[in-house]
Length: 91
Image (cartoon, rainbow, N blue to C red):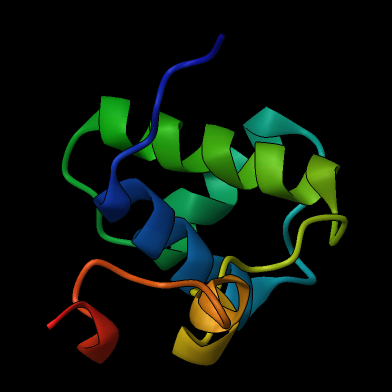
């Protein structure tokens, strides 16, 4: 299993990819230079983590859909017809 990326890394990478998608490649070293050019990141480690995550996302491509919460109706759809603890019939 790999390391879990923080929301900061994911957000910065997503913003960079939205603005400069055509520049990023599957090569980590090229992505590291692109991150240095477009983002002001003080530490070398954070720059490398962002570049590595960008490389991962580019290699992965668009095969993953963005996660969305299911609508409340969809979540409750399986409960129709069942008695719940707080239904009016119990009182």
